[in-house]
Length: 201
Image 1 (cartoon, helix red, strand yellow):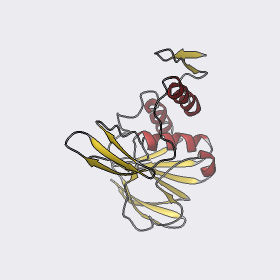
Image 2 (image 1 turned 90 degrees about the vertical axis):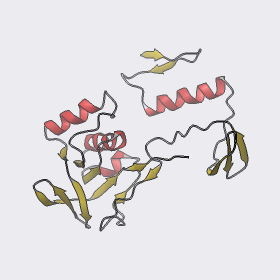
Image 3 (image 1 turned 135 degrees about the vertical axis):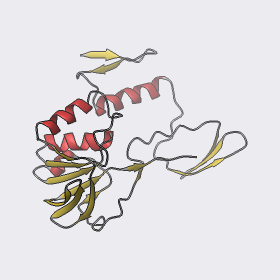
């Protein structure tokens, strides 16, 4: 058992790296200990910049604040890939449960943290995973303990990766990928297009 954390709130983990549930438990304890003014189940509808600070309008109220920190994670605003077949039900811009993709042919677009996590998790639940990456390699911004994992899976052939490539069309049972060697067609059941837009004010 590992214990980290500071300011009197230990972060206890039974794993080399904290799991999602362990992190959520820690955040909840921090919020309670320091009596943070938390507004739950309240969506942000608008943010308006003022001479000093911002007015944040939500589904329930409005707040005046000096600063704003946007912490939406990797699944904020999906970036549409704008190709034939993107509107098919098998295409997802958000990813949740890896078990859903077990024993399926899955394409994961991109090589950032969200894409790599999805590729590794679905692979470990039995999916046949193909990554389609525009760049020459897995992003160097991927978590340092995850990047070697996915690169090893690619090197050993358990996850197929096409670099300098892009998805160009999606059909019910197949998908077309433009690679440096030309367009190839592979069997496909699901596409995870986890490409997100950043939010700026």
